[in-house]
Length: 157
Ligand SMILES: [Fe+2]
Image 1 (cartoon, rainbow, N blue to C red):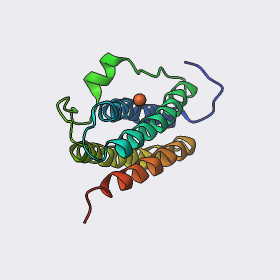
Image 2 (cartoon, rainbow, N blue to C red; image 1 turned 90 degrees about the vertical axis):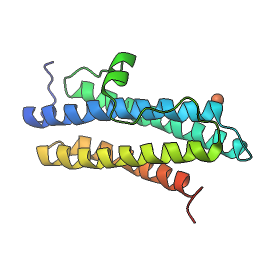
Image 3 (tube, rainbow, N blue to C red; image 1 turned 180 degrees about the horizontal axis):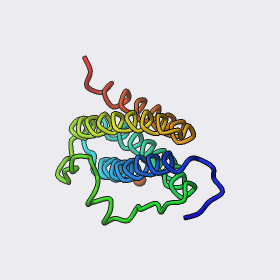
């Protein structure tokens, strides 16, 4: 769509592609984190149940910013369930996991994978000339790294 936003067309195109992929993965990660919040069992229940809630609440805020950046750049943000399921780059989250530490490990591997993709997206959008998208993704990246640290602290020796 036409917009007065003067980010160059090629930069818009690259950034929208990057952002759409991260919108999908981030939504999938939100759902996996909610799955863990609902079903976690074991002695660490109270702490993990609350921690997972904090994670998905913040992911919701960050994902909203990503979707809205897509629209600011003149494209359509596609967050439909069908698109999430068909295009997510994250491993499917098992609906059989119960144990707290199993959830922590399953989430840690997905937060790590997402962090890597987001970092690649920062470089791609920066190189294409959209520094605002790179900045938005940098904020996203900081949160994912911090969350990964909090998850890994449960099983690092
Ligand atoms: Fe809840």
